[in-house]
Length: 330
Image 1 (tube, helix red, strand yellow):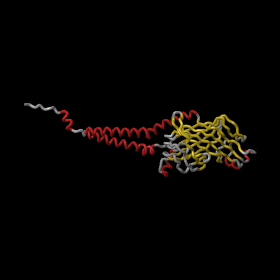
Image 2: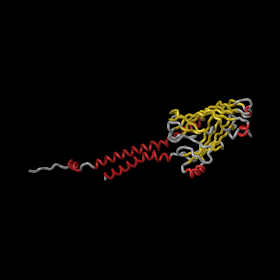
Image 3: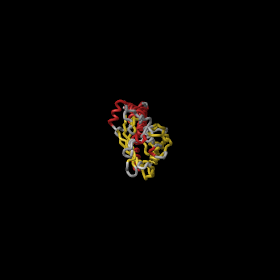
């Protein structure tokens, strides 16, 4: 009976020892994915910013510019693309909506971002766009991969429609979370004029007809929680200019927008809490369960060997220890 118990324990030890690497290296990459129906919004602010007054075509100081960013998953579109792509796909419809201190719209730029649900690599399909213009993204946008590494990544800039390195700058503590800090600089680049402008009747074609062009530069900063690949905080040192053309009169250029864009405080708290919750799930799959199963397997193996040794103790020794000494009579 003891031998049978030892064999059962040995089988369980092998099972849990084998399950440990399978869970980490096989199951986790297939189970960890961005949900197709995810919805999130974020509010960023640039206080004491510079903003163009389109009525006078003069730049002026304003108390605050607000940027509302939303990302909404399109489940039907993702399922349709998955049929031809043969992998799990997420389709995010994004909108960056900018308003001035008076609450009036400054610009709005829609996006459609299509990517692999597991790796966050872009998936090229019909509908991929920025502000209605088809694009072919390279690199990541919005989210880093699960288990982010301490290295540079390629990051897509929607304003310039270019991909450029975003550099790993070190590990920091952000409100109790260990995060990786990344930074990207986009030098002055000629970019397209938004299709939706704050002046009624003013179109990109009309602006282009005057010979005026739009230029943009930014220093983009992200603090990323590495297990989930989710940014917990972000900033931009953002500048836009209109240059040349008859629209500016005798001026060579005018600032369209300049400001230090930061996440609003309440959205920081919400994001940190959400990332902490998701981080626990990733740790469960990558650390807690694999190491726990390995420790359990070793414990069962030790118990199995112990029972095996007990089962092979010499039977004669036990009998000798209990045998009564015989009496010799005369």
